[in-house]
Image 1 (cartoon, rainbow, N blue to C red):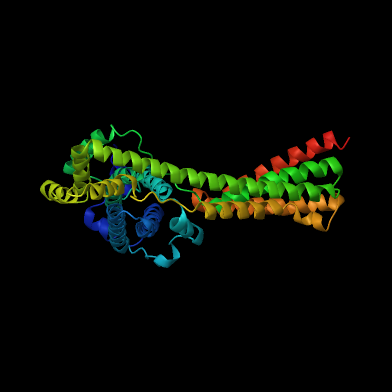
Image 2: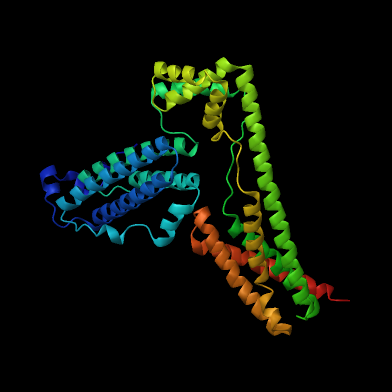
Length: 407
């Protein structure tokens, strides 16, 4: 790695003179301000994610990362004061409303993945763009090294764990060897807000129907009939699909519990060792963990519940509400699907077609923007992508309708 302090005139100044600079070069000023803003934003993100993280160990890691970012900020501020650079009001550089909403509701793994990428980007920028001021570059190099360490911690969090010390790593290895025998374990991915995706599916499907029938009939009353039945069919299809999916999740959870119960009955000693390792990961010593496990194992049912809770996250087989999932999916799909149809309640012909197309494309943008809350893309890019998809679907089906006609 090259030394950033080897370039620029700042590296030739004695330390005392560098510290007394009253008017730093613009490159130094901008880099310090940019780095300071990055640290303020990263602190906010880590704190927001930590509040949502259910695992206390992972939450503690995130809080420690936030504390490190705060330390970076303090060191940057000291250097900025030395160079007589005015420190901005942090309220003006915190997350925007959309980013804050994403941090509060988007999948935690996606948020961690984005932070990991940002840490790598910051480290790369520090390496590739030295300021020319030796003291500033030295500080940024120190921060770079710590940011690179962050990516290791974030990668472990993203993979479902928490940063480990050597002793914990050894425990994890033993735990993984035991887990290889139980290959039936499954991890649930969660149901990413079905309402938005239901609205997406309903809107796209029925917009295609309305556009196609409009092209074939010139925007006659048939469009209203076809659109209504398309919306009903889409909503019912989504509702039944969501219901069956949730039921399947419940059945899989019950099957997992049955397998775990069988494991406890067939291999109680290995299950006890496995449970002991889980407790050691939580901070107990080996002796303490074994003592707790022996006490739990006095009742086989308690042993089963304890190991099921550690491995599966639950011990009662309960899953989501299938009826609630069906209602959410069905109603959101119906809401999205009815949008392209609404203009044809009052309009006919090319006026109805134009208004329906305009309303539908606006809705496409809105649904795409809403999806970005969970995908962590920008609202504009996600909304425009969804709008482009609507243009393609609507345009293709309309042209196809024109070509086919009504015979």
